Structures are given as structure tokens and as C-alpha cells.
Length: 209
Image (cartoon, rainbow, N blue to C red; front, side):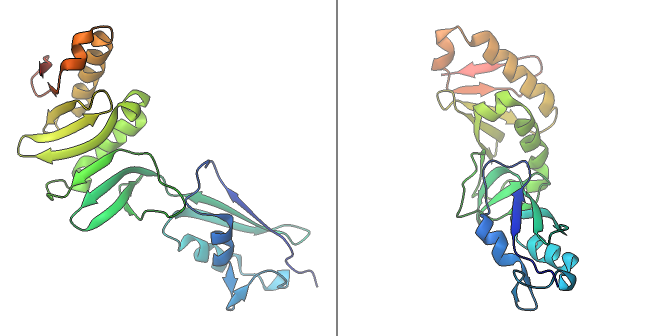
């Protein structure tokens, strides 16, 4: 009777691991014991997949057994797009807009959502987070998002400038306007002296020092 001797754990399309191979290995429990040295015929692949997918860092998992009895585990991890600081603690917002816990293994470099005042609703700000993530320029530029009585703000990596979006209406147009502004001002040393960039007005970018 052929038994499981080797376990091959593969993290699909991921360079930075929130999970380690050992962490996944520890999830492969069946009948209260690990799967190594268990008979191939006794392995419940669906049960093992559910065990791996129960981990909060895992989006999907596939488990299969090869002809020679090796167990292959393919794991797709959840992808964080932002890290939120709120009254309820600190967590990531993943690619589906859901809360995701932090990891002790790896800290993702993503924009911070400062929501300690409780003004921001995740479902409201998520489209903005997606737009930032999908654009390499804004991924490099934006370090934080906050909201106050004036509306939404972006903090940039460029001299810690504050960008006022106001409401989240016409966000695509506002971001496009901001990109054009930065490209235009790239060679102008005066742009570094601006502390606030206001995008609330149609066809205008209002700057102040």
C-alpha cells in the first residue's frame, strides 16, 4: 500500500509569503494526525483543502496526490491592498474589499488608511484603493488616506504633500488631473514647496504652501 512520503507546497504567483511552508504543513491534518506516512487511499483531498483554506491568509488551495504518492498543495494567498488603522484595531483590506489580519511573517508595503476617527467606510473607500493599486504611478506616490470634515485626503511620498479629493465623486478624473499636474510640475522646483493640492474644483488644481 503506497503511502504519502513527500509534501510539495507551492505558493502560486507570490514572492512575499504571509505563510511559511511549515505553517501550511501544520494545517494538513487528517484524523488528528499529519498526512505523512498515511496510506494514499485514505487521503481525503477535499478535507485537506478545507483545512488549508481555513487559514485567514489563504484565498484558495488545491490539494492533489501524484502517481508516486507525493502530495502537492497549491496555495493562493489573499492580497492586501491597504492597511487600515481604526478604532477596532489594525488590519489589511484585501483585493475583494474584505478585512484581512496582519501577518507575523511579512508586512506588505501598501497605503495606510487612517480611520481612527471612524469617518471612513470600507465599502466607500474601496474603489479608490483599487484605483491606486491598479496604477503604478499612484502605487508609488500615495502613502496614506484619511478623511475629515473637508473630505478625503491623500498623503503623498513627494515631500509629504496633502492632496484634497473632497468627495469620492469623479475620482478617476481627479486622479487623472493629479497625474497630469505632477508630470507638468516635475521640472519645476516650486512644486516641492506646495503643502496642499486641492482637486475639488472642475478643471482646476489649486495649490497652497
